[in-house]
Length: 321
Image (cartoon, rainbow, N blue to C red; front, top):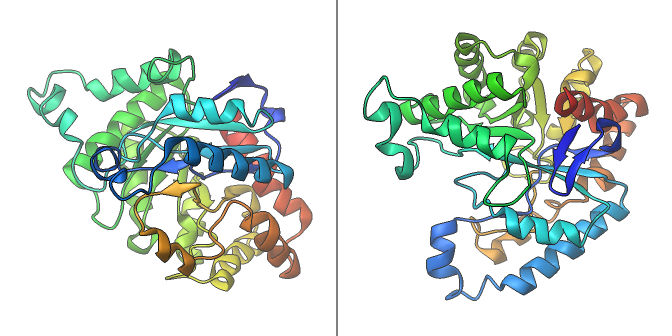
């Protein structure tokens, strides 16, 4: 069984799955300080908007979204639970972990091994609790772990979080999603560290792998056993739609449809971007994969069976163990 916001479900019930989407991405402290003053955050309005957008997503045929919102991205599980209760036909898988490109959050800066090397890592205990008991005082249990390594590389803080996630993965068996920067080939650093910790690549999803057209690099990671997140469709800035579709087509041609999942990394609302600038990304929304990406893949020669692998079979296998 796989833990979702509304309780455990059988892997067969995941259906069409978008493997990397957010409901909200918030800078929690800044939002509390400034959000109301900019009139960008109205709790009731944002919740109602999220319900509407997720209902549209269900109507498109999507059954499950994987939401990797953790510490550093404004995770608020009581709010997500409230939203999901109004969209009961949608499975939402939520995560535990820490999202940082450089240092650990100040909360962890002077705890555990940062104080004395022999002290246990407090992140592991907290992650395990989220997975086995529930998050933020709710009965909602995390279905997976999430951390990040970007172009900054393997800083001491990033490594500490990655190793804490690895230890938790081994203890609980839940899979791990790692935000990566394929242009810097940070997936290779992930591979090295996780090998030292004893985590199998088959339990790891390398998010944002679709941010490169380097098929040889992605093939190397797929052959090692990693699942590749082709998950930023609609963010057509450094890579346009044709390039993002093209790398998926090429990997399918090479026989790696079983090594990819699809998504947009979209959100109902995120406070990282000035709202009026979102007009620069008109396709960055929950429906882009269904409405535009899948037709483009099929037109380029990807088979329906391969599409079903990426949207149904691969997420089911990965999250269902």
